[in-house]
Image: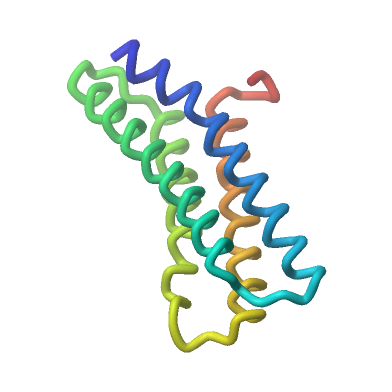
Length: 132
């Protein structure tokens, strides 16, 4: 379990980094009045893939904690918050078709900002403070 905990703990930096890169890219596209492009789709896919990898590691840890009877209320809270973040990250996939490009960009940016906020809240609630 220690290796999975180590991977899960350190992989969060990749998730946060890809989130920030994605948000900056989308923000510049929005400011430049550009539509949703193929590169926007790819960078969003990298971000969502990083989140999916992270939640897979987290669910593996959760399963191991349930087996070893080390599941706590703090773990349950972290699970709910992070599951909400993953849900918001996947919502933009619904807009692949039938959505105007600039509207899709705005909606996707909003969902990814909410996702990042939930991730940060989930980390802070698990840690109990700003200790990273």
